[in-house]
Image (tube, rainbow, N blue to C red; front, top):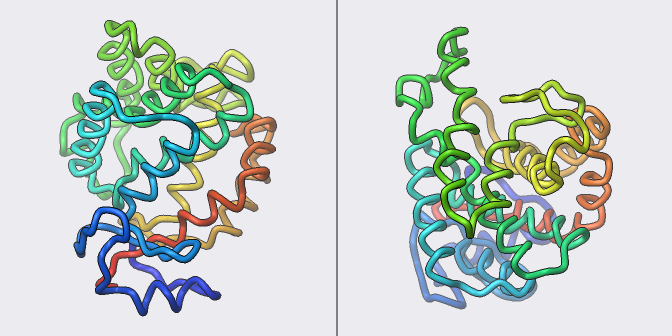
Length: 254
């Protein structure tokens, strides 16, 4: 992520640019790092810690899903571990509504693989820098259903598949692919929508630099009741401190 940090967190991160991750020892200019709570760590380890805080341990399905999500991010040229980042952060909202580890694991998987259906979108459309034509947009809008078709065959991914299918729906019914409204949209998908928007705004995109956390927060609050479920926004505000921390990630050579 190409940005300058502000406040107290900026100086430790800049001073530690050539340091290794305190957990895995990695020194890489392709990974993002942050200096949080007295330790310097890479994005991989910070996100793994977040999962473990909520009782999720690695298992074969999860490791496969994370590897697939990382490959999808590379194809779409996302910033850092975008899919793993939004999945781990969605868990912070999900814990306000779900208690069973199995449910939280499926929230994680569904958020992690939200864009798996983009496998079927041609590069000419997926990576197009300009506005899509009507026909191209129609193809892009198929990706939630395509992703659902991939995951629905796996019994371990039943709730996850619903997240994939509904992650582009909006609370006011203006989303796609089905134009679902309000509680017609599965709750995990409503939680994910808030986090996905936060991530899109606070990390660099090809068309603009990252925006401050408070700018994203104000926009999310403004869209409560239209784009977002007000309950999801309330959970977001309760988890503000933890979510704000992840916006301090930066590449060590920038």
